[in-house]
Each structure stands twice: as C-alpha cells, then as structure tokens.
Image (tube, rainbow, N blue to C red; front, side, top):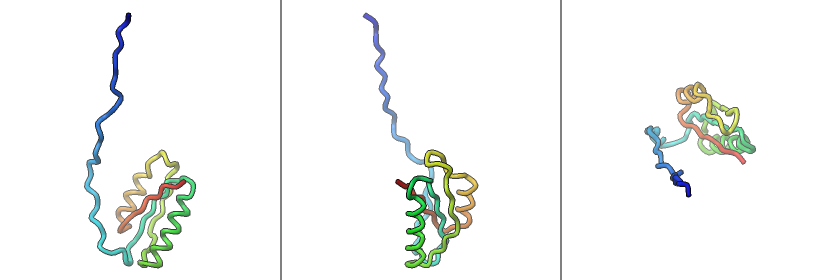
Length: 95
C-alpha cells in the first residue's frame, strides 16, 4: 500500500493593509467620482444614483471611469486622478 499526503487547501484570512478615508459630514455640493465595473447594468445603476445625488445633495459628477472588464482592476492613473479631483467615489458592480 502506498502512502498518501493529505493537504489542507484552506488559507488564513487576509486583512487590508490600508486606512480608509475619513467619512464626509455632508454630501452637499461635493464632487463625485464613479467607477463602473463594466458588468451589465452597472452604468445604468451609476447614472440613476448620480441623478439622485444631484437632485438631493447638488452633487456634481466630476469623473466617470469604466473598467475594461469586471475581472481587471481600475486603471491606477484614473484612480489617482479621481482621488485628486473628487471628494468621494462610488464603485458599481452590475448584473
């Protein structure tokens, strides 16, 4: 009889090594950045949300970035530009 090696496929959880931005006290008049993951309905969701925020809080859509596909990260330059030009950002996942 041969020997078998039992392997445990589980891993330890990984926690993010970054500190999030401070929360905004108010959205009124803020500049919004949006990232679309390119899945079905993500654009429509973001458009409806932008219209709602504009009407309710006078938010201005400053930047819109569409990823090439849901499985790829957003363009780092677009993220950097958004961080400089926008007060907050929303990422939508469609489907």
